[in-house]
Amino acid sequence: MQGKQPEAMNGKLILSCFFLLSLFLLIKRPTFPYSSDSLTSYLSNKCTKIPSSVSNTLVHYALSRTTPQQSVLEVSVSLQVLQRKSPCNFLVFGLGYDSLLWTSLNHGGRTVFLEESKNWIINVTVEHPSLESYHVVYDTKRSQAKQLHQIGMQEQCQQVCDPRHSKCQLALKGLPSFVYETQWDLIMVDAPTGYNDYTPGRMSAIYMAGLLARNRLDGDTDVFVHDINRPVEDTFSLSFLCKGYMVEEKELMRHFNIPTRAAFSQPNSQVPAFFIFGDSLVDNGNNNGILTLARANYMPYGLDFPQGTTGRFTNGLTFVDVLAKLLGFPNYIPPFAAIRGRALLQGANYASGASGIRDETGNNLGAHVSMNQQVDNFGRTVQQLRRFFRGNGNALAAYLSKAIFYCGLGSNDYLNNYFMRDYYSTSSRYTPKAYAESLLQDYARQLTALYNLGARKVIVTGVGQIGCIPYQLARYNGSGSRCNEEINNAIILFNSGLKQLVDQANRGQLPGSRFVYLDSYFSSQDLVQKARTYGFDVVDKGCCGVGKNNGQITCLPLQTPCDNRQKYIFWDAFHPTEAANILLAKNAYSSKSKSFAYPINIQQLAAL
Image (tube, rainbow, N blue to C red; front, side, top):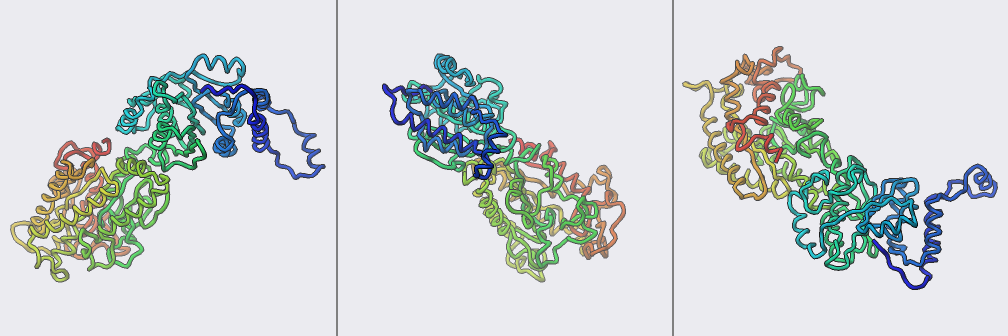
């Protein structure tokens, strides 16, 4: 980054000296009351010697015949950050006449310069041996900028990783090892040369600044790009440092503040976030504060859950609680009703007991949050998340594309709608086939809405064998089967259509997405048929409830449940026990059989 050398000293140099001294005094000003006595006392007890880095810089600028490479206004952009962060780790692409300035402004910290010209390093360091500089080789030409920009948009360049192992052509892999291993607080890109098509151009330097910033363990990195009046500096900084992270722009200097990737991911988790939509099978407290009979925020619900009663409709863990643990999340995904702000970065649970695909489903039990409302709530979440991504739509989209979305609805559209003939008219208006088709049309629209909001990895669950739950067994008096096969047959129609929706999405109807279908009908049937193998003794009764099969009335407040909960498939008239949920979730997560998860399992989905 060799600077200009005019023929004679001009007034700009004198101004630079005063400017530098002012900067130093501003950074190092003592904090004492401005009285003569206190000043005398302060000076008598403090060393007043100017640090060598500053004195050398003052001499350099006082005697130099060079023109400063950045204006006072441009220097002030990074000065504000240095005042806050120094002493710190400061990486500068380029070695120039202003290098002493950056070293002195970061007095006590580490300032490293990466320079393309070996001869220039020798010339500068002979005169100023205190500067820490290293040679860097660029294998690009500015004429390649358009092509390299397109390459930078490809998947291999979007991955945040150690640049030494990156497959991206823009990554610099021959730098000293400490450059990759240091957490840089500030990075300035003012090199390599880029004034014509035969020079290296700053494409790789800008890309590397963003990659090093995102690759740090915690905190954030302030990145400065000079000469933004040039196409490469302008385009590459906005693309790879992200326009949404831009803090300010003054003259030819642009300032970005880039958070680490750790700010948007969960430690050890396979995906950055987990968003859950559904009914009481996965509700974990959203119904606690609304007027409804579909509530579980009383004992003995939560009897075996570490935090006790929370609003979960089982004795312990729900299906998605187990799934969150299998995905590596350190905590269970909280209910949307209880979180806002940064906590949303790990995901949220929007599920609501008694809810369904249709808005009126579950009205017989009181208030609830339908699937349409759950999708709206997720839309509000996306708006909140934009703030944490500083309005950067591309970064937010990349984050959401790696998250997992779970959607489990449909049971109540049959139990608390179609087959509740005294309360709803749907069974008189639709045949079972027509009703399934209507549900699927509504569901497809809702899933598409999630897709448009950013969902790309989506799990949809079929409806279980609800004709065989204790609630139905307590009421059904048919012959030839212990279960209500009229309900089961209607469910099969819906599930078959839902699986076809998954195939359509995966064949390109929703580009870039990957859907997984969980066959809850087969899974619930499998639990009963292989009950002894799985360790269950009771397959047709709730562990807690009233009446025949403990299914005529669901678990009442303070009721004493069964002692051997591990031996029951059902906790109450409708919902599985924790033991059953653990088995169901494990099969969906890692089973190689497509009978549980289709076309891939959840572990494979997370790895995509």
